[in-house]
Length: 298
Image (cartoon, rainbow, N blue to C red; front, side, top):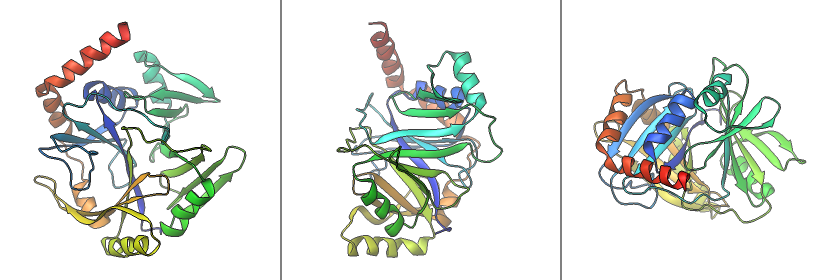
């Protein structure tokens, strides 16, 4: 399945201003594109919300060859409840470690040259304190599962990933579509997976012609399909087609047609200014920031 590739993970964010600071100033990512929507997504990209929302793509480089973060902001929703589903994103960047220390962003040393920090909202990020590579610094995304063997079978047999490492002591399996891509790590948490309200979504691209077959396979195997093959419009940009799946533990998985997505995901040189403008005009950001400061001081 070398034609399939890992794209991004979707995070719901409540404090857009503080979130932008974390990804830009701490991690050192760039704003790749920013889009505003007046109503909820047909494929629930923004979660179960019908109102106005925005999508900001941030990463270390173009989406063609970097795994990035999709920051989903629902206007009027200031916080989300975390579960035990998303267990961390690992990236290699000594610069990010230096940035965090310089800015006073909380860091905890959890291993040799390895630090744990958290994005606003509580999402865990692991920073490898080594020189940032010229290729994508993002190494892996870790998700919790209740039955490691069952989940491994789903992701490999049905979705076509290959196992790259099986660590029985740590109860993890590392897998991916290619050695050069961001990997998916599954961790057996030996219990029910709780998605809270902050649940995210991991996205992959495949040739558009594979989408109907993927949907048919899931139907044949009696697996859950959250959104059957559907077209998604972005104002002023390319329309893409997606199928949204759910793995045995309810992790949401998006497969999008690669050809159209490459067109949609081109870096927008105005992305940074579009985000800054949206934040400046959105007074709820100020209210949330003030409310969080008051909570911290209490």
